[in-house]
Image (cartoon, rainbow, N blue to C red; front, side):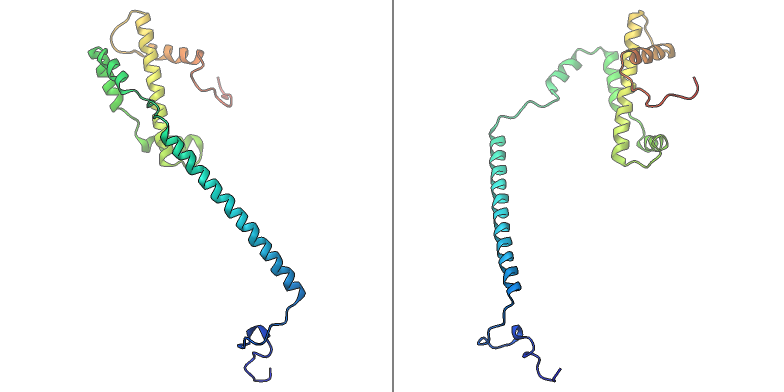
Length: 181
């Protein structure tokens, strides 16, 4: 360039307020489009604020509504536990304290599924396994009472309980058939 300060080449960068920059008609159209975009953004912001106000009003209405009863009614549980025999109470306490080791359950599910699973998923699978075992044991006890037997559950009672749960449709169905029967 000519070695000057360079402000003459770019009229927008000149330091004097007296000089007005030369405007390009294309730039004027872009500036008008940006103004319209700004108006659209303003409308969008107004819509967002309206939605937020509506959400706040709905939350206030929800807070004013009476609270619903909890899913688990502790009074009913205490009443039912008061009716337990000593043997039933002992079994219930053992059931509450029992569980499957989460690391072993995680390893088992990973082997079956063929992919890694998270810790919460292993906890869920442990809970489901515990529920399944509880259903089988409960059904085995019912079978024992139908046959007027007492004492410990025997393997034949467990097999019968499994068959009964399978016939009632309470067991999952295999997605693919086994190769060997």
